[in-house]
Image (cartoon, rainbow, N blue to C red; front, top):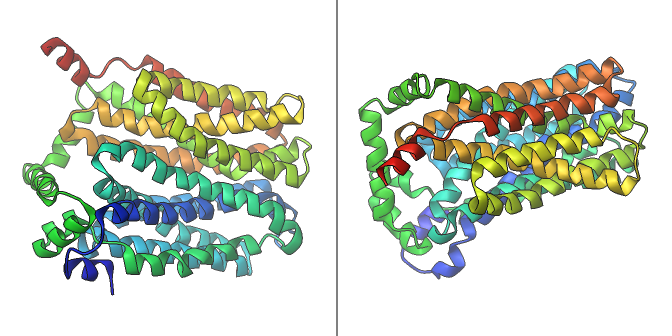
Length: 446
């Protein structure tokens, strides 16, 4: 029986035992999302040596961008699909979708088919995270909502860490194709668990007039249905007034336009860093003279630093301010990536790889948090959507740029310097942003 069905039959079940169920299941799904995206970076060195396909670095870079292009379309499609079938079904479909299409990459007979499968997998990868984030925030304990959200999103990097760790063991023994077969695991674990235990979104049920189901699930998970209902009513009111159009007007207004462009550029550079390094860090380190195993270990540390750093940086931002910590995080990323180009003891190189992960992912996470604080409530969703959309262009460019640098023989040191510059530019933009007009109005009013 589905979670929706079982929840609607009564109020049984201890709230304390249920309250973490949704974040855990969403975290599992997001973890495999992270695995399925980072897995491509782990096989880049092997693809370059795979004589049957004879791929150049430029071609490998372009193929690396296919999944990200798919993610762009997936994120756009997911919103419409979710409104029709609900968040629970949409999340499980996304997991099954990217699991299957990532797995079949392992049997692709040609680079063209391989690239097509990567694009198709990207549709599910891109659709999953917005759904998982919305479900987690809806069911998270009210007093720990931000921490729960950040912990759930840290699972993305844990999945990337898993991909890099498994690559060190599996690729030498079984070849690069086996890395894609591992992606079938969520199909047999996350999907069955989600079908049994994952509840439907309460806001979706209320919007569809299924109030009795919403109340039963709310009692089981300790979620006040009245609070969710007020949120749904506000969203409907904003939609009725043409809220999306008003949000665009705010972004493009004289007061916010340059600020909006600054956030778009920071998002562009931040996602270029994340996807460029996730795809090309092992390849660039191999060009720098490290063995394939050592090069993959840098990706392990990059993703591991991101998983731990997200939680640390989130706490620092709460204490010292989002703007300051976001700018410092990107600065840390830029300096650490630049230092990777210098010959130094291996332990030091490992440390800087980890710090690069801390700064890159921590800075990008805080960009979205900062946007959420910067704009008026009526424009925040639009501001986040536009920044994420422009940022995706950077995500597409990152793998292509890495391939061009490697193909031109410029990976060392210019590959490091190019991505380091992206981090420094993102930091500079954040530091130069003036105070939010919303914050200024509050300060003057107080």
